[in-house]
Structures are given as structure tokens and as C-alpha cells.
Amino acid sequence: MTGGLLDFFTLEATEYVDTLDALASRATSGPPEPDAFARAARGLRGSATMAKLTGIAEVAQGLERVARDVRDGTLAWDERTRAVALGAIDDIKILIRGVRGWGTVEERRAGERIAELERLAPRTVTTRVRGRGSEYLAGIAAEAAAGLLDYAEQPGTAEDFAAIMRDVRALRGVAALRDLPPLAEVVDAVDAAAKPIEIGQDTATAERRRLFRTAARVLLEGGEAVRRGGVPPKDSNAVREFVLATESLRSNEREVDEVVPIASLFPDDETEPVTAGSHPPTTAAQRFRLEAVSQAEHLRRLVADAREASDTASRDRLGRELRNAVRTLARAAQSFAAIEIANVFLAAERGAAALEARVLDVLDEAGQLLSAQHGTPEEQAPRFIALSGLLASTTPSAAGRVALEGRMRQPTPAFVPPTAPAATQAAAPSGAELQSLLATGIAGLAPLGDEHLAAPLVGDEDDVVPIDELLFRGRDALSRAIEIGARFKETGQPPDRAALDELYDLLQLAAAE
Image (cartoon, rainbow, N blue to C red):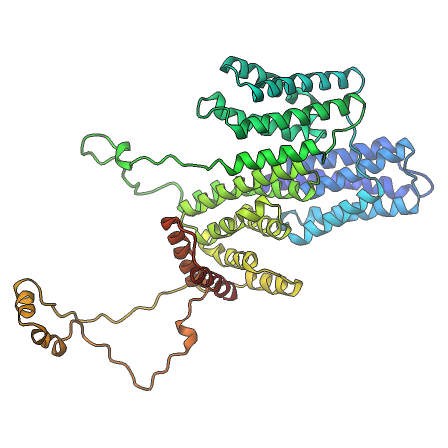
């Protein structure tokens, strides 16, 4: 986020929060003017959303709900309500002042206020399609479901499938779809599974047909619930079967990058195809930041959504999106040789897909580091090494987390490999000389005992090397762990117990640095 956008947000948000403060402070004997209060809260929410400050936006949304419930008479404006509203407004002022250094403290403060407002004025899931609108949504959901069921039982032509997908995608034109999970997740999953068929890369495999069949049942079930004026069930048998079908399809599909010989990209003549610029406009670190910032902000938004997701279908969708976002960031870091940064995202991939709370915390911290644009990848490396250690630990305690954060704030000296004294090499016997030596048998090799192939290293007999100096530590340990992981991939064989033990020991040594 640019400094200019933050400046604009700070000015605009301060005006809104001052209006809210004045309205709530004066409302001692009765509620504040509800429409004016709701307008100010809505304006604050919109400003925070544009600035991608999700925490402030959700606190403002909670104040909107308070104003709505007070206006509708479902919530009394008493001392408790007034105290909660004033407390939220005071915290918003603090959060606005901390937007430039937003971190875990601000996230925690915002989360506490969001939860308090949720208890006072709970969110209500309501359909915005009533009467004829609900009939329309139920009707197109039934049409889409019928087409998917027919195709799942007997795949037809490409034209038939295109017509079915038009019915499925028509659901996206219904404004209330995003407020009706899991219908939105079903449409997204069907759309993703259909694309390989539409472009001719794949056929209607058994896994895809199973997904279409289970998706149709969820659409029918959800459409009927909306028709009756309710909301679609989030954890029914149909939804669970749909989630299993989605997982099965994803597990059987491997992402394959197209690899072509680099020579095929060069012209046929012997001209030099690529030359390095003498004065490049940007450095590698600057290019990495340009690429990583937007991806990191997208990652943090997914993390925030994952923390709020409660239904099975939403969690499954967010798990897939988080895994893809983590993979993308890992590849970007690897392409710029930012190994310490890449290691964090590589280690977090499985936990991200499962929405593990500890992994979400690490990804949020990593995304914040990349979004802040402070320092080069080399300067940020110590903090990412600490995050790798947090992922490697099995039971992080609160005290351990504090100690880790303390280490992350301290600069780590760069590793400097030791230089060995140059040895004077003696020419080894070869060719005819070697053949002559071998021809005389073992006795002919005796001169090798008198003439060394390299000059011996002379050291002080009193020198004692501590055993700790011979152990991998810090970045050395991580580099060794990466080598072992690469060997696993090259061989394609499952690692044995000894290799796994070595890998775990290296991760512990890296985390202990």
C-alpha cells in the first residue's frame, strides 16, 4: 500500500470516527441518530476496505449492525451498548494511528472488538431474494443441477456441455449468491473442473463426473431451501459428499509445468540472443518487491477470510486458494534466489491447505513482512529463518513465541564461509608413468608413500576444536536440509528413517540459531 493512499485513508477515516464519537458521546439519555451513525460507520467501512485494512473495516461493520438493530428495536441503547460502541470507536482511533506498522498487536485489538460487537449485535445470514426472487434463484439452480446430473450420467457433445455451463455460470449473476454458502463455492468448483473439458485438455473423467453429480445435489438442496425462505444447509450429507469429490479430483491432478529446451527459444543463427544491460532500470531486489507485494497482500486477505470461514465448503475453497497462493510466492522467491523466504512458503503449503491456525499466523506475518517492503530479501532473511523455525516446532508455547519474536527483531550476521589455505599440488602420475608403476605390482606403488599428492596442512598440536564448530547451524543447516529434500525429489523413492532423522535434526539446528 502506498504512502499516499494511507495518508488519504487517515484523513478520511479520522473524519468518520470523529462523527461517530460525537454522536455516541452525546447519546446519554437516548440512542444516537441512527441514520447519521450508520452513514458514518458505512463510510468508514468503505474507506478501510479500499485501503485493504480488513480489521478496521470489520469493526466499522459491527458498528453498522449496532445502528441497524437499535433502529429496528431489536437492541436497546443502554449503558452496555453505549460502552461497547464507545470502546470500539476508541480502538478504531488507535488502529488508524497504527496502520503504517500494522502487526499482530493491531490484529489482536481489532479481533477483540469484532468479537465483542458480534456478541452485542450478531451477524444474521439473510437471503436478499424473497418472493419471486427466491423462485428465480431456485429455478436456475434446478436447471443447472439437472444439466450437471445428465452430463454426469451420460456425457454429451461439447455444445451440450457449453449450454450446461451457461446455466451454471448464470448463478453468478444473482446478487445474493455470495451470501448463500455453499452455493458460491459449488459454482466456483464446477467452473474450475469444467475448464479442462472446455479447452480440450481433458475428458469427463470419473472424478469430474462425481464432482458434477454431488454439486448438482447441493444446488438442488440449496435452491429448495431458498425457495422456502431459508438458507442452504452448510453441513448436510450432500455438502460433505461434494467436499469429498472435490478433494478426490484435486488429489488426482498434479500441476505440471511445461518444460522446453532453452535452445528452442534462440534463433537458428549464431547471434547472441540475450545480452545483459549495462545500466538496468531496477535491481533484482526491487523487481522481487514489485512482484511479491501484490501476492503478499492477496495472501493476507485469504488468511483473514480463512480465519472467519466456518462452513465446510468455504473452508475447502479457501484451503485450495491458500495453497495456490503459497505455491506462487514460493516459486517467486525461488526465482530470485530468496531461499530463506521460499523455505517458509514451501514448509507452510500443507498446513495452509488444512487452514491450521499456527500456519495461518506464520503466513500472515510473512505476508506482512513482504508487503511492508522493508529491506532486501537478504536483509529479511533472518526473520524468515525464524518463521521457518516456528513452523518446524511442534508445540510452540507463548514464551517460545515471545523469544522467537525477539530473535526476529535482532539482526543476524551474514554467514561467511571459511577460507582454506591454498595447498601446493603435486602432479599425480598418469599415462605411461602410471602404467609403469602398475606393471611392477604393489611394490611399484611404494613411491606414492614418499611423494604426497598435496602438501600436508600444518597445524598447531595444541589447537582444540570444539565439537559445536563441526555441526551445521542456521543457514548452513537449512542449506543442508534443502539438499536432502532435493535428493528425495530426484530419486522419487520414499525417504528412509535415517534420512528423515537427519532432516529433522537439521531443522532443529536451523531453528536454534
